[in-house]
Amino acid sequence: MTAQQRKIILTITLSYTVLILYFMLFAFGRADDAAQVAGYTFNFVPGNFFRLPGLSDLLHPTLMDMVAIGNIAAFIPFGILIPWLYRSGFIRFIALFVLSILVMETVQALTLLGSFDMNDVVQNSVGAAIGFGAYKLGFRTQHVWRNIVGAGLSAVVLLIAVWGSFGLIDKVFTKELDSFVALNDLRDSTGNPAAAAGRYDLTIGGEYIEPQYNVYSAEGNDGGTFTYQLGNKELYLLLNYGAPDEEDADGSLSVTVDGAELLSVSLGGDQRHESNMSSIYLEQGNELTIKIKGNIKLWDVGYREMTYFWNRRGE
Image (cartoon, rainbow, N blue to C red):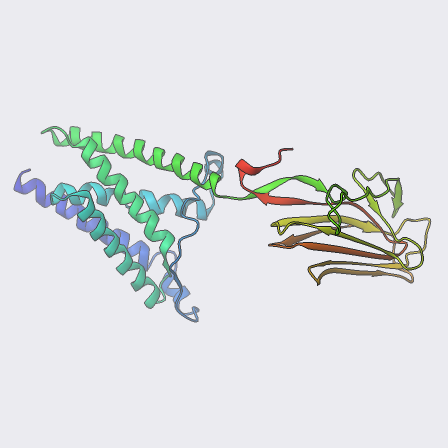
């Protein structure tokens, strides 16, 4: 590399650094937002840096999609320019880069011009690592422009590879809703298979309803109580309820999990007949108890568990 070429590369590197610093500290109205920030924000635990937009998301990208890709792509040039200027091994390069990003993230937080986010640190460092790999793969000749083209193509290939790898890792470690499990398929509080609740047609609010899985109702004047073991799962409890048109809207419904009441409904007087649907999120729960009094009917009661894809029941 000639002295003139080094000056040009150094000028490009410094100019690009100033541009990145501008975006990190002043772009997107950061100065105006700083006046409204009440305190410092530090996120030391990375949690979602694997979540990059998919190909379908890029057809209608959101701001968050662009930020996620930008956090990686914008720092690829540093991985090419800095090793080009100063010969360095990967460990030394990435250690100094991570230290620099940590300093900048801290400045962002202390000046209230942003937040310290370890997710950004990881994504920025991945971008620099991609650039370093592109430099090693692309700079193999004495021809500068040929090296630049080779590094650029290598950067694109490595970025796609990392993008795909991140998508796969995110898929592996992200929980999704599994198929519906009817409540009467569970075991009751004694550990025995639960008796299937009755199934019949309903007309509520002029709407004809044909339950697909189960129907629960009060048993005599004392009402009905149904208890099930959920097995301490993370899930969404799903249920439908209402009073049939041919009966007075008079009754109550309560849903509790491990003694904590999650749903309480009372019908009476001149209340309209209408069907209702409820979805209740449970981070963890074991004993589910449903109490019904009066003529309230509860149907298609069940849950959808949050599971990893390798542990799914299937539709």
